[in-house]
Image (cartoon, rainbow, N blue to C red; front, side, top):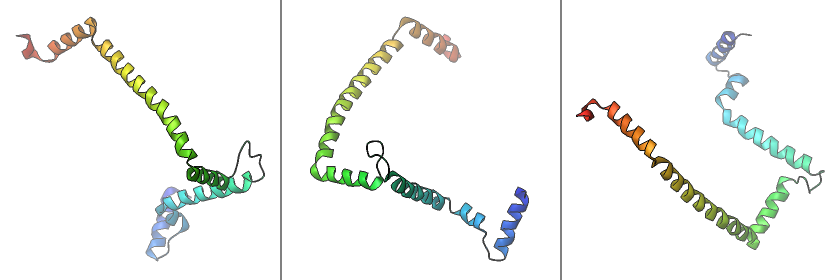
Length: 127
């Protein structure tokens, strides 16, 4: 079936007040996305029940453990312990990259090439 005849069939169905399944699913793409996520989580829950918890566990166990860690305050403490070194490293990286980039742009060859580019760009600057 060609694309043209498929499109014509969709139009014919709409003229008679019927909507084909293909046209309905094309007009509701978020439904397919949400259904695929739901199917994924159901499959994960079902298939992971028989697996070794050391390698993979099921989503309800993960959510239960996360909820328990949140209530105990362990999750917040672990988050702080992780964020502090990350923030220090990020600050060091930002300062180092800014100082390195300032050093790269402040060389004699860069200044002379920028002067040359500036003088070639505007004819009025030659006077």
